[in-house]
Image (cartoon, rainbow over all chains, first blue to last red; front, side, top):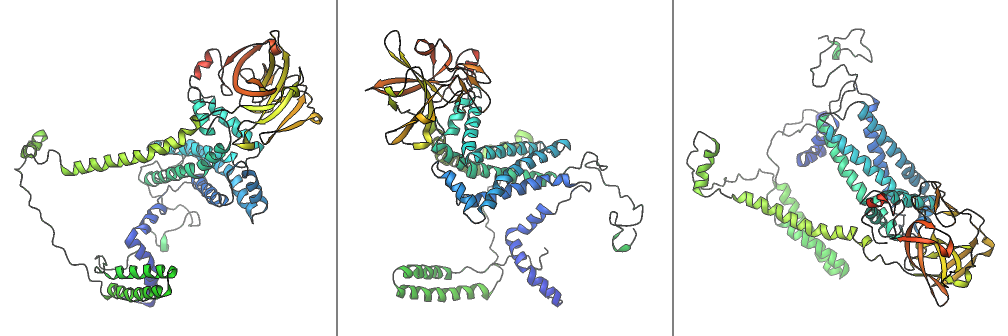
Length: 261
Length: 317
């Protein structure tokens, strides 16, 4: 081990020791750097942040959902009362439920905006076709989350909207009646319907969404971010260094250290 | 983050037996907390002693682990493969008879196969558990909805009752029941119409006055069954505007057939609800109506015509 040369060096050694310890045993630090410190096209804009925004909205749903599950009771006799209890009696319950309820709409809206951005920018083209497909699966799972979550308040709107939604599935040719029967958990909507919707809403679907988000992000890491269609730098081409035209400023910084090339 | 270490050797402490004693000590403490404080004290002493020895062992030296002599296996030297390549290159190994089915391929196949078998053993029952119950044991209870006298002749009564006594209030359903009086052949006749719209299953409402003042409530099997007289000119669905006439035939909107009906029985002067059935169109009125019964179909499904062919499989209801 090299002898520390100065007090500053000693402090740095001490500060980095836990990080180095972790890195040596897990490689996590390098992995996180690979994940976060990526090269992106210079002409990307806020439009490319819609995916991260959607991810954030999903994490908000997952977090608030976990805590709502601590108070929610998925049985026809208790579901509505437990929602009333969460909203009116539990400390900050109105806030967490409101975040989950409105965040659901935010999540779906962001999903569509992100999808529109990818479509309009042509970012689904080679070699990113599979990521588009994974994204479409995520959209379907997100809509299913909305469908299953809508029943849980167990009020009139929830009940009849779910009746209509399940019967809509039931009108699909051939497999429709079987699908509807599976969703209802029987011939009629009842106790089994509520508990199976709850199980799908908080276990099955989020699990699948988490897994697919992992795959989605891995493909983004591997394939990189696309330039916008109006980019002056074609993908794959070597960048031509353009010498600064005018006075160095905020938008066009001068060479580092003020030394011209 | 740059590693500030110069050496590339792993920092491995030598093997040590002290953790075993340490673990026994911890176990003694935990047992002692339940059984007696003496055992706990002995455990604490053991924990302290072995913990100290373990820490001393670990911190004493971090010498690199002794280099292990690489294991060498006697390998039968195969004759040099011919230089022309292709299939001929495999010939010597096959001829030697030792690589025909290599051990690692066998182990790989065994591991994957065993994994698949275990996965199947776990997954299939769970899938069956998730999927099958809705399709089995779907027996519909008969329901008593009150004495025949409670239904005045020629008038509709709104009946709410429990379709499944075990499920309780969640199975409360609504029917429109009309006593048609005696038919020409002397048999009693009732028109019992389900309130579920055959578009997508919303509750249809009577288009006409509902006589709340004459509501009757009767406890049957521990749950209230209510009967409210009404004078509908037809039935209408609030969801998507489906309209039906007084016999349940569709007159407007998206529904695909007439409202579903129920079979009935009269036992000891009481009206008993039997199985539901679907109807495409009701010809005639009241007790003299001509009705072709179809098996109970879901909302939105045609029961006759070519589009009925799209629903060949029906779930039990």
